[in-house]
Image (cartoon, helix red, strand yellow):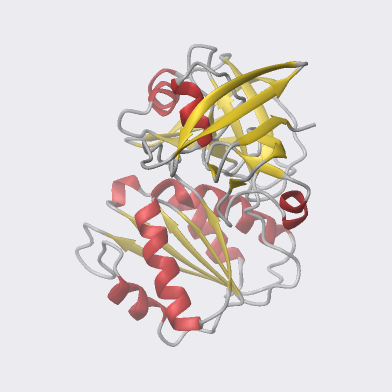
Length: 322
């Protein structure tokens, strides 16, 4: 798709929101892949509004991030964006009775989409949101969060945690602080997390330790680590259009990273295991994919894998997914 930017709004010193003239059928919590031009890579950004409203995305500048730097510093009205999507499994299922959301920094964006949808539905279930930020000046769309609290009739409770807090809850996130914030609150049957990976790792451990088995939704916030791997090497043969290319993959190395090093062009999108653009079908062998990647059990059973986060477990033959 191609979208034209219709407005750009500065939210914080390092983040902007922008609206576009496109239309898209998506679910609250999902994201798109976008790039401002063909010289820049694709990157994943969540909608910060609920479906049915003018499309808006909110982007925070990441140090060294070419796309986020371009968007936050150079994007202007009438610019054109290339877009793919929607993607993502960060969607609240029907039937949840008590929701706990944990957001860090710009990880608040998919939650805004979800909360606005809950508002439109009359706040069907109670929600507790823990919102972690480094500084007050970097809180994204705080006024919209406050408006949602007011409209919820007590169904939405938001706890703001700031690393620079002079009073109230002071960060950064820690097991002790999380345990304190969760004390005395109703047990959730679904926990959603979005933010920096170290924060989500810590939150997952704390939540599982406190509540035991509970449904956890995680929206990854960083690119997959492209380690060099070690030990044995395997051969992966990529078959497409009657031709094949082979490349070597070390044990523990992501298949996509190995292919790139050796000049083999495999399709990729978010590179976090969240969008499915890099999906392939196994002809022979096995590529092991993390449980939290965006493949259903039936897709795995049918022989599909993701090369961006997948690791070869022996010699393989693969082809593009239909």
